[in-house]
Length: 335
Image (cartoon, rainbow, N blue to C red; front, side, top):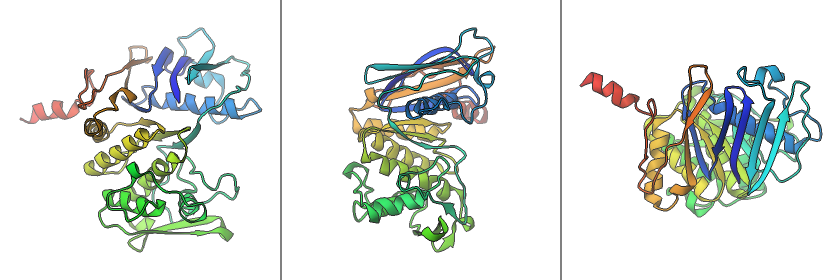
């Protein structure tokens, strides 16, 4: 498990060390540094897994990542099970690849696919069991773990209405939380390297955004439990979901972490937070494994982080200004 991350001179961070836990929530104002933490983790993964120095690939040059108020080189450090690993990125973009065991990241981006008539699949046999950041290969992944190499969902993540521990059965049941009694089906067409899904017999483009957006999220949370060395990172899991759906999804997120997978969530969802609080209270013994970070910007647009603490009753010890308080502010103006 990644226990902490340190960022220096990186984007909006002058210097910040943050603890990460079995379940970590990153929340706060727009463009306040939440996604930068995720970006840093993905860059570190490349530093571990690449023989070439390409972990800046896709992020621009150093000048695009450098904090303009910092004189130091960009410095990223993570701690994994009491071992520390770091990279320094200078103007010459030189950094040695890292050696060690880095968690396998299952990353679902905020820009994941909405409703599409077809979803691409991976033709590389080494990737046919992995979901891409935009939701690519999600249907192939379901087929792989449901029929080719059947995987039984852990009992703690099995939906109460699921008739078995099979992956497809539980994906369908958890989708039913979002849209009750929805009938989800899919087909993978290997010869065309594509796949498509239907909801109640209709194309995905003829139903709401929420089901397509949440399908890779639910599938990732269920499948990632195949190894406790996995790290799940999900951006905006609440997108296009109604409040009850968000709350129930938060319970699945909690259960995934409770089952031993490290989960990092970037969210603006008040109901995601409340769902985590409710699940923590119902569990009664996992609060020390839940970490919350609230991000905001100072007058120079550098990131400041406050870390409220949750207890076994789901209560939070401090509520920084702006921390999920807009309902109360609006309510006070209405009544």
